[in-house]
Image (cartoon, rainbow, N blue to C red; front, side, top):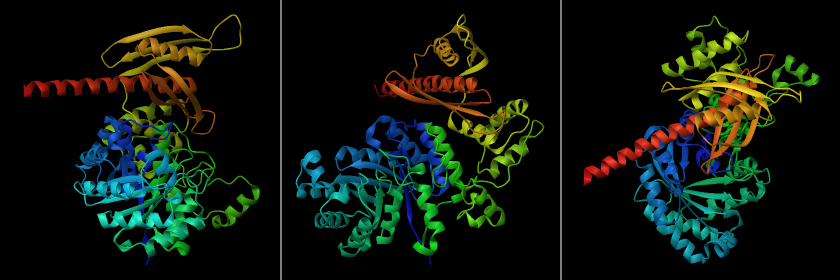
Length: 523
């Protein structure tokens, strides 16, 4: 009989807090839905006390998402645990994840606490967390560099206090597979009360060993792996969810373990995360990279034609990549588009289907054939953010090397409230001219921090995807746009940020009005 490994997903907490991977509340909710469909057992929705926005995101996910256990992180202090408990309250199944550092370095320089004080703080935190839920996880931060006998004492105290999951994190990515196997074997056999808790591994990738160390921890007795989609996370990242899930499944003969992950949802979830954060997956990334199932070498191609198992240990279909690439065109209807979307792993509401269908028809008029990657790009664009209120009515640019003329952009925008604004602007380059025009037309002072554009499909009329990161009023925003025209894709990405800022301001305005009404009602 195959044992199950619990998958604890921290994409929305450890992954999202890494520089360049931040998400707003709406994006976190959409990603949470994808992770729930993927089949993660525990979904760490955020660090509730970190900010009002993080608290709201955790609470919304707890209220809206069913299936996984919804978890919030908390330091071992009263305020953190209270915030976590309030945030996860709406969830049907909830967990509070408390942590405190245990290594000599952290005790001396960060906490300035004695060994006994650390244990007292941990026990008090677990006791408080149990007031909100009977599902409490305790993490000994920097456990790998903690004295083994002291770590054993801390873990025993945590289990005695009522912790049901014990996490042994390799916080700085320092350990090796042999070392972590031995440590987990020691803890799961020598700790008093070890049978009352699930032992968990949380490995970072500083030395490129996060996945190997997590699998080695399983060999030592761990029955929960903490990981993130696409391996995102602090510094070099976390253990990659898709890699451990497929490693356990593909090498079930060796590990004798599996997960509840619906592998056919891996590809879509990975692409959604990359699109939301604006961080594309490396082509050579295991499982979800563009080259993961590509074969260019003549020798490899010959072997594949003879028997695909000669060079493939997994099938592309295993992670949701379809073998066939059905071509759609301008004569295809909604039913065909919906069918193809379902084949690709998307479930579209009627409103989403209508929105995507309009974009699909526009694209089909420009392209002779619309392929799977085109459909994915359109659907992911719809999934990432709501449209409007600003839209591009028309855009024309001129560029060249003629020293007598500057690149120029002619752009017309329309607003949901009926406003229409136009501008002709010259600048040092066509992209710069477009972005400066959008700033003036929308009235937003955005500063471009980074910009990238790439082809997401192939051929002469390939779809381009533009990703930008801009700063405004001390905050960082990510925008994304697609089109067969790279400049238009860039303009849409930039306008995406302007629209996000306006939608946020509108939400905050409504929130302030409600707060004022509530105060007035109490007077």
